[in-house]
Image (tube, rainbow, N blue to C red; front, side):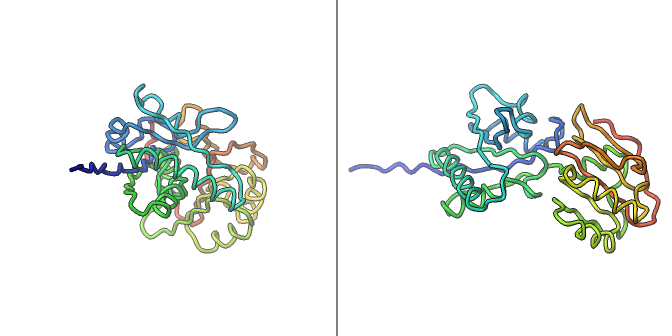
Length: 253
């Protein structure tokens, strides 16, 4: 009589590893990262390590399998779907063998994160897959801390625009919100500057490049900065309301 041995499926953990500083990983995320046999992350471009891979590099052990998953920077839905499916199947090869996999993502895994596409695709293809998420510090919170400012206070209304494709989106937000955060700012900075100039908001606007990293750069009072060459990982915080911001003591990470 043969005895069938059932292998328990591994767990896919989505771990938010923060905006860049390796010390901004949560204790829970760190413990899981040290324990799992397989660590996955979005592949970098041009053969370079990705942001999340760089963040966790010093915490990884030689015996851990490292998976660089390809998530192309395109808008074509068919190409993206194929990439998500391929990545999901790559991760599933380890999960079905009972091995846990940690997918690390910069910022928070539920905040405009690649992990969402990976986990949803995996569970669509393999409904028995088990997924758990570990939150992390997202870039707007990190940027506010770097500025020594609260992101919001009392009843202030916050709008986060992950990408600005039409300047009227910002115009609408300025008419409704008290605080606006613009991510993926670099390609539209000049149009945004012109709009904020018309609204007399440039003195209440800040730009943070590479928040929490050693090469972090902060721009304040943008009235004399109509042209800035910003890297991809830059964001802007606009205090729309007339309330004077409460400044914390400058943060040192």
